[in-house]
Image 1 (tube, rainbow, N blue to C red):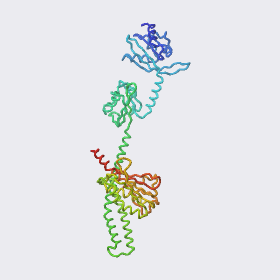
Image 2 (cartoon, rainbow, N blue to C red; image 1 turned 180 degrees about the vertical axis):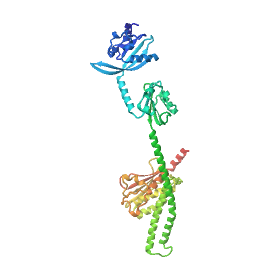
Image 3 (cartoon, rainbow, N blue to C red; image 1 turned 30 degrees about the vertical axis):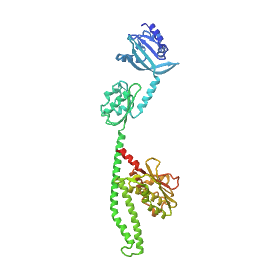
Image 4 (tube, rainbow, N blue to C red; image 1 turned 120 degrees about the vertical axis):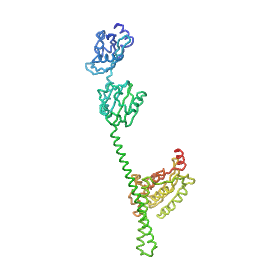
Length: 488
């Protein structure tokens, strides 16, 4: 085909209007068409280009690269650096060159200005070179196209050897899920993640790996070295286990000591009571007062030992519970009378709000008594004047009952709302209690732990700064039965 006829065909096809450079050559690689954009881009007129060897006219080594690649297939591609003169100034450009073999043995070459893409690629490359994670990219044929500096170190791949090589020649066969994951992403183009894999040849380290599909049909694999993090997590888990075991050992020790203290203490309480009641005969009045004080102190110590014993039993999870359906009216009717007496002895009014036909809760009656009693006693203890009230109600959240205890005492500061439930913690506000009436600091701690042991909770309510409100939340028996059926 002559250059003239080729030019006419090209014009008819609209190739003259292209902004990209386009040229054709015959089977002997002689130029048969050179469009206007090629004239502007390469600075070679159409007249000078026609009939010239195509590969010698292309800038840089583009000709030799494209020709070499086309020997291996019918297509070739290359990125060509080029310096162009615009209004008297030189500008560095990058051209994406694509060559295709035609049916008559000729060649069509298309040059597209890829400078903006190349600059964006360079920015991404700088970013990938700066990260600490390893990054590998492949094309659609599994050939590695990019390996960043971190990947060279983390996964022992030399960039010069890796680029252009099939990924499967370098990827270790173990663990098999790594290769399976990469292939799956290539097929369905969906990202995936593997945790703490241990590739056999990757320097003995452990990695998290992410796979993503690339626009050109390839995939990328990002490796994050998690060895140090996993080592720290294992060490923290070991230390936590040791601390837990130490706590259990402490609890077992306290439980044993508490049991041993209880026997002689019972004798002290009993004998001081015998002295105070003149069981062994008349004793001086001073001795009676002394024995009464000793008895009060011994009983206080006994309560402390009982609380410590209960706390340690809870901590080592040996506290037995026997849950059943508990009706509120008879239960509170049995627990509250002696608490009412305590309140009235201090001049406090004591109210109980117990609606009719409340549904039963699912709890151990004895453990529930050990929850309600210290919460109400605490309210009485820290209220100097006013009232203490107990209310039972069905909670707004379905399936739950609430026992609410309110007082008109000084309340609890926002910063102390969590601290008040800590073991042996007392707020230290003398306005809340006189020294003779201060407790062990275990009542609310035990009440909350027991409530949670029964599947409920104990928390503070909102009072607007007036007094304090504690809410004991317990599962209704119907809810517990439904849950048991679901578990079966």
